[in-house]
Length: 135
Image 1 (cartoon, rainbow, N blue to C red):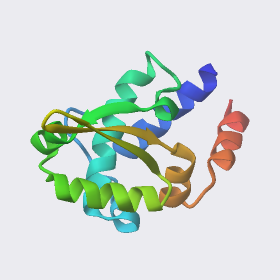
Image 2 (cartoon, rainbow, N blue to C red; image 1 turned 30 degrees about the vertical axis):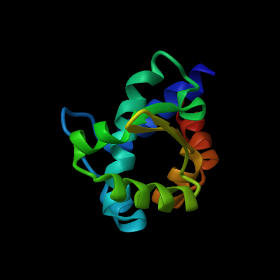
Image 3 (spheres, one colour; image 1 turned 135 degrees about the horizontal axis):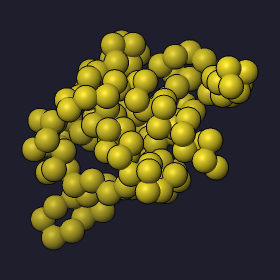
Image 4 (cartoon, helix red, strand yellow; image 1 turned 180 degrees about the horizontal axis):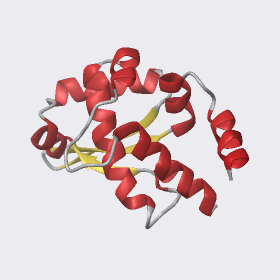
């Protein structure tokens, strides 16, 4: 399980870079779209922080309010929904939508295998085997 957590964190760092700002992976932008990449990069950045606490967080999910996402990265609620739909259709994320008084919040789950397969064109299993051979 520790190797899985380490690999997920490593994959996120490699996809995003490590800095105080969001860096978009240009291969990701070309393959899934600009707004989708921006939303996914923001989510991955937040997930990476919590991987240290919960190695299963990518599968168990994390809560985000639409208004917070709009405030942080400027994607309107409409654009978020369109991006979520495309990412869901690609099977990169799963989204559960909830309403709390006047706010909408979502629970996002990320499928790293599918994301890596689409962006890198290499199944995650092949990357894992390559990292085992290097060790």
